[in-house]
Amino acid sequence: MADITPRAQEAKKAAEVLVKNLKVSHKSYTLADASAQSGLSILDAERGLHYLVAEYRGHLSATDSGELLFSFPTAFTKPWERIDRLTKMWRKVKSSLLGIAKFVVRAWISIVLVGYVAIFALILIALSFAKNNDRNSDSSSFGGTLLFHTLFRVILDSLFWTFHPFSPFYVGYNDPYNQRPREKTGHFYEKVNRFFFGPEKVEEDELAVNRAILDEIRALNGRIGLADILRVSGLEREKAEPLMSKLMLDYDGDVVVADNGGISYRFINIRKTTQDLVMRRPAPIWERLEKLLPLTGNTAGSNLLIAGLNGFNLFMSSIAISGGWTVAKLQYLLTVSQQQARLGLAPPMPEGTPLVLGWIPFCFSLALFALPAARILLRPKEKQRVAHENGRRGLLRGVLTRLNLKGIDEGTLKNEWERSAQTKPATKELVHEIVKLGGEMEIQDNGQTLYRFKDLENENAALKEERSKAQASERDAGQVVFSSAKN
Image 1 (cartoon, one colour):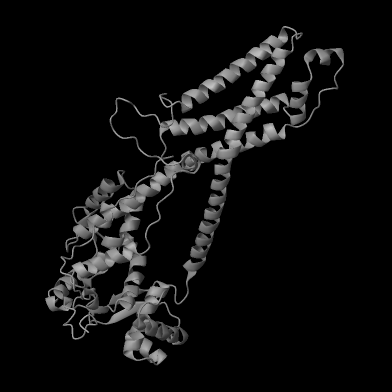
Image 2 (cartoon, one colour):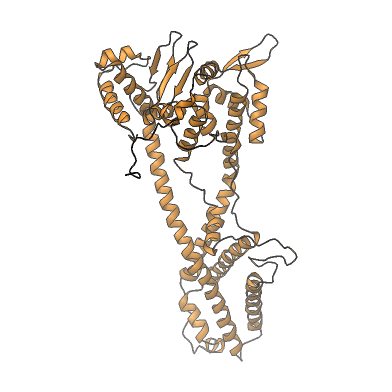
């Protein structure tokens, strides 16, 4: 965890002392426990415990007497680090392999794929002329010549109608009766990458969540609760609690415990400003739903062109395999006439395995088609993941906007989930996410199922009281007593 302020540095030193001296226990620690076992002052022990909450994903709670309790479900270990490390390593390997694959695909399209199209076309032309020049060939050669002529004509027509700017199959075709400007879809190699690998995900700004949370703090008079973090970030609760402790260290926050045990967090220093601005709360996370990326993000013409080029190479390489097209054999067919072969004046036709013109382009073209096919098969799973995440955000909306002492009806939460996910949640899936938010099930006498979020309810009440104490003067940065500009 990065240290930003001197206070965070002091907290880190205190945390190191606590880790060495605290008895490993899955029970909660009071400030007195931590101070007595470590020898630190109450203030240093509190700072160190907040640091440990952020570092080891601990939990913070309060008693009805206003005592803070710090608990560490995994003691002072990080069992998630191995998973995170493996995940991070896999992402790097995946990114490297994807980068290499994209480079190979670019080279394949720009050199090999288009190059093979040209090579196969030249071979067809050469074989066609060689057969035409063989005046003494029998009638059976006429069928072969006609086949080559027909195939060659099909290739030329396909390329003409694909690249001709006035063709309706042209990759960049723009309907002359449609006055809308043509969308810019990027370079050809980018279209190729999207066809085989799908559109690239836009990397999120790592500091975007921090900026949104700080805007939330300033808009709410420097007093926030865990619900405000959930509202802005959309994080799971087990990750939001350590983040809150880290924010306290980085931005000089304080914990305030109300009489009802509700916990709120006060950040007075972050309110200081010289700007005459109206602080507005950032948009909640449920207004920024995830979207399922398109399969390719290309136009139909682009997909048709790329699939056509790769399909042509797959078709021609299969012909090369069936016909045994080796370089030596093609050279023989182009230099030796059929009459010479019949009279025994030519050497025997060389045999061999067609690699360059056969198996290599065939396997590579087949593998390239397998990439979008695999993405099509995995698309339902990705669609399910997006729906679950959006449903979870809808559930957050239902909990945070309808929070009350009477509880929230299960049907209401289901509707909020379905509204965002556009699909009905499984009961097990819904209950699991509700429990992760701290929900407790209550079944009424009439059989109605309600969920209470008592800690969030207590926090809400505590925040109302704490925000009523906020002073406008907290925003004042003070009077200027020295300025280099004046001197």
